[in-house]
Image 1: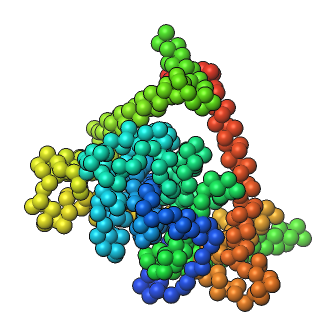
Image 2: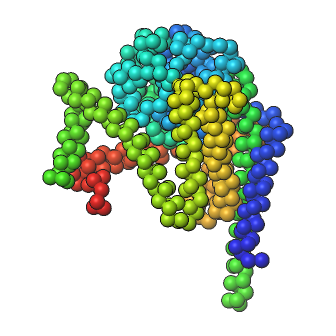
Amino acid sequence: MKAADRILIERRIVFLVLALAVALPLIFPLGLKTIGTPLTKKAYDLVDSTPAGSVVIVSFDYDPSTVTELQPMAQAIIEHAWSKGHKVIATAMWPQGSQMADMAFEDVQNKLGSKVYGEDFVNLGYKVGGMVIIQGMGRNFRTVFPKDTSGLDYDEIPLLATIKSLRDIRYVVSLSAGDPGLKDWILTAHDKFGVAVAGGTTAVSAPGFLPYVNDQQQLYGLMGGLKAAAEYELLMGYEGSASLNMNPQSVAHVLILVLIAIGNVRAWRKRKTARNREEASNA
Amino acid sequence: MKSNLPLILAFVSGLLIIVAAFIPHKPFGMLEETLTNWFMIISSFAILLGQFSLIQVNANRVAQRSPNWQYYLAGLISFAVMVSMGLLWGMEKTPGLLGQGESVAANLGSKPFDYIFENIYMPLSATMFSLLAFYIASAAYRAFIIRTFESNLLMITAVIVMLGRTSFATALTSWIPQSLSFLRLPQLTDFIMQYPNTAAQRAILISAALGVVGASLRIILGIERSYLGGGK
């Protein structure tokens, strides 16, 4: 068999095994439990310790490609905020973030019961511009968002009556899949206007945000990927989609480690054979 | 003049923003506000420009029967369908040219734009991202080979962090006594992420920030002119 054909077959086997490793735990859940980490707990504590009646921002800075990791976080955060009596403003720095917000609000409303649009929550939609938009919100909220996504004027929305600028917001949670996103909120909302910022990101980008979790509290807690979403669900006392999806993800991680081990054994055997051949030819 | 005017504009705008950061009072604060408002407006027009560019590039590929032209045609059709649905019946809360489209929404369960977004675009988009897992698995098998001391270190760290990020981590190392709990996988993972990783990330962040300062100064001072186009 040619080397190219062998690689192709090997690759297909890897794909098939991974598909099974992901599908089977989804069909037959393993009941694995996730334990909490301090970073997720910090984000939870920020929401938990904020007094009722506070107006907060949840920024949907992602699109459907990362919905598996970030949407459970959004739902858990909104549920937590509403349970503490917070009023939630949804903003989006990614074009499709606005729809993600609508879906998250709808899902949590189905669970908790009806909340009043305009009083308990509002979706201000997408604005292009990243960091500059946040600076604008810091100066004058109304200038940046004169209307919500349904076309309601700023003055017609009771929730926004007391909001003049970003300084009137108690905390911001940015759920971010890249740029623009969490980094812009940290550098502008926190560093320039002193608003507490917490964040949720995909697992792959979480390590890059760890330097901001520091003594200056640039970032109040960080939720990285599906595991953190599952941890937040655990802190909220329920098992949602993140907890369920941790089963296939855990199995897939272990499978990848097994594949790395097999790949190394194969490479080691190859090197050994080559060395033996070389020694034989020298002799 | 044609090339000097943009350079002068970039210099003045850049200088104003820098000065306003240190002196946020009149007239600098006001000028900064005006400039950032302009930025928002110009950025909005960039979206429109992007749409024209998308149509132009794809239409040219289809017209010239470039390789895989069918995909470009599919892109154009998808774009046209979404724009039409949005224009005719609007989105969840906003009406379109034909109103709220109650009868269409009654059949589909939601407005056509929202229906396509939730039932076609979202699953496709999530699928594309999920495919990465298959490539990572395949690459891990073929490329993550221990050859040197450094790759050995990388491998050990990767194994600890990957296992530590799974729900198996607790079960695998819960037998380790409390006095040695720092050796448990979740604790080890947290240590790696919070200390070696954060230290390296800080170094990268500081270097990148210095790079941004340098690049921005080059643009403000007119040394870097590639943004003007023309291939120079």
